[in-house]
Image 1 (cartoon, one colour):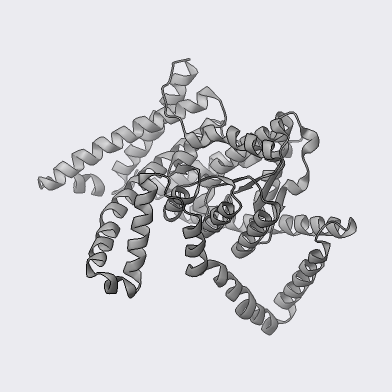
Image 2: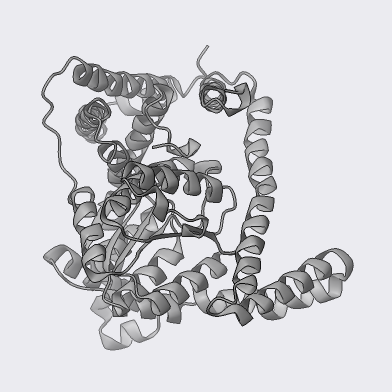
Length: 258
Length: 202
């Protein structure tokens, strides 16, 4: 039933899903899970606290992509972080400014920010213009972001998700106003920029892990445990295949064409 | 609560479509419908453009009505919007002129290497040995792309090519594998109803 050439890939896919589910199951059983911590996630509270002390706003962006196509999962994870940041802003009484150039991100972000402020105990602070649609063009997003940063001088800038070159401009302008910057994207070409310019980064799949971590739900954190087990299996397979290929063993080619 | 307002409906749609696309990818069954579903996603997202127009119009109308700071810019925004809209539907040469002579050059100015590289170099901080290594790699690789590189030292090109072919390729593959597993983690959480941010819920 499975297409020839995709059978091994399918087995790996099911195995990974299974391990992640087992991680969640372990967490549900109340087992203690030792998982990595992400400094960027831990710094969210510190960042919002900084904005509160300085009496400035927090700027948040998810870049030039929405919830359709290949970038959807990246932005779903970024939206989880947005919800948590909104909650922290509500607790500290900080104004949160979210900007997007993808129309359907607007109502979703508005709902998230509203719920975040309500959870944070300050539903009165929420206004619809906390989430701003700036036009459908990437350059419009860059222009609006730069304008906001230079004019309002937010002390904290966060940009997560399927970001593109707007991330470079945002981080550079954030640096000009001395903002604390948190950034993360799984998009390969922009990860080096986060490492260079941001104070805290989420590299690669850490963004997805952060989506689970910010929930604060120990059961969701179990998924990260499963993810780590999957990585161990992938590393083992890489070593086995590297040895096999160098010894002239056809195992690797056989599995790929199986 | 109305069935249309219940969160189970969009969650079910999300999960059913996701499982169908995975099934189609591995079995080759129903690939035509899978292709159509991918197109629907883009079409539905395009319809959402109306939400953006309503939001941006509402914000600027309120700004004008309350004479808030920077209100004259709202007039400029509305003039641009109206001119662009009518040119797009009723005066094609004017629309083409706006795209070729305003939109593309302005976009290119933002995207140009001078702007993007300039701002990232100004914003970069070599706070650790790792970010220092990245700065070094970026500088060397940038020299590979311009004629100035070999003039400084022919050896720079060899270093740049080595960086591009070995460490960069290796890291790209490792990160790609990690991202793949990360996506699967998100999928499992979504199927179990733990991930709800796409519904606007925490």
